[in-house]
Length: 237
Image (tube, rainbow, N blue to C red; front, top):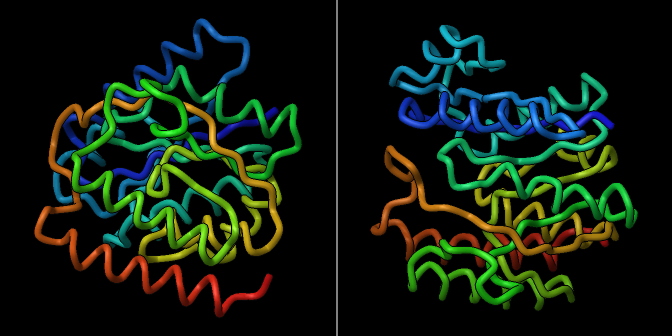
């Protein structure tokens, strides 16, 4: 079973080595080994040089493509190298490698196509749940996903996700550039694939700065909701 961790990273010089070392340490003590691939999304800091110096597997993009383009680069790599499962794994230290097994298990044992690591489906499953306003936004996005797809998704913006070969193929050929997590979730549900949420722990960012700023929140919310509506009611089932 070949598993690839896709690690999109933009200006993550504070985190990229620590993040990779945690994966290496986990592999030393685990039966199932995870390959890791950092997608350096046109970083302007030392991210690429740190990857080169420490021989961290990586692809450095010439231009910043944003999270959607960076993640799709990882899916293209997973498709071309015949991986069985691909896992999105944030480059900022928020995702815990010990929970990867939780989100790949339903794919291996339950014939699930995509698994979302969730902070919200089990009380106290995660010590970090983001700010109050963002949680309100996530609930609002959840409402509209349910409206257009018929399925309740609780952690709608979770970037901690695992997909099987069929979805790797889907995402390698087409992946949303903007608001990729909620939009791609709607698309996958509408196409009839099986999606499941499992509880995971997430941590606060270990260093650096998030690409989502507070002043963007209202704009983000309005546009992601409109995109969900267009995708949900305009796309094919």
